[in-house]
Amino acid sequence: MLLSACAQTAPPACDPAAVAQATDLRVIVQFREPVAGDAPQTLRQLQTLSQGCVWAVSSVSPRVHAYRFSGLADAALLRQRLLAWPLVQDVVPDARSGPHAAP
Image (cartoon, rainbow, N blue to C red; front, side, top):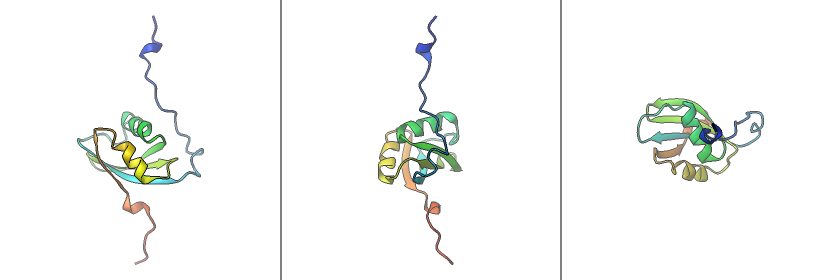
């Protein structure tokens, strides 16, 4: 019996040490329906689409989640890649990830 034909291919695991020097992009992803933002299948799909490493940062609501992507420097390209997933409605930079102005 051949079980290998049923095996799903997953993107390579991201090693945080390997991408530590890479540029990080933090974005807010709005989904068209509620999703578990930190579920392995969600992270796998985001990683496959982004072609970089992804970590869930926080959940804003059942449809809105913040993520950190490493290995990517172009926010417009990241947005374009993630919007290819029909479940993704919008992708915007996480305003809280930039430098903060002094009060």
